[in-house]
Amino acid sequence: RAGLSQTALARRAGTSQATLSAYETGRKQPSVATLSRLLAATGSRLAVEEGHPPLVEPSPARHAQTDRTLVEVISLAEALPTRHSRDLRYPRLTSVTRPAS
Image (cartoon, rainbow, N blue to C red; front, side):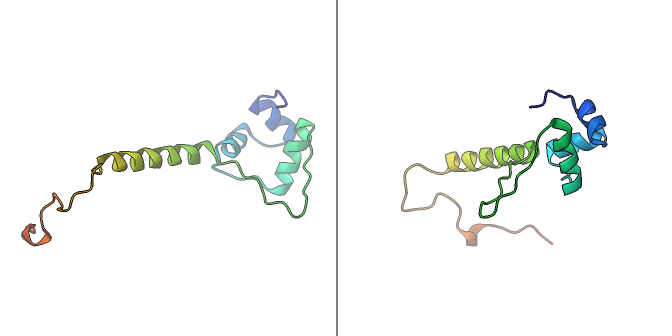
């Protein structure tokens, strides 16, 4: 929002560009002091109000994990039969052989 590069913001806030990158991707979380410096460096401020649940935006890494999980669930759902059958079309457990020990 402030139109700053990570390098410029890091310089203004007294931290490193690598640390800012870790904050943006969700690999690290800033301390309250660091967050205050980052906000001040962008000309912003943080207001904490009682009675409101915290708003947390999932990291890009978390979004990617959720996407992968959703694809797996959809693939599993597509593999299930669309019509219910009285008989299972899988071998009975008694007929499944176990590998030799």
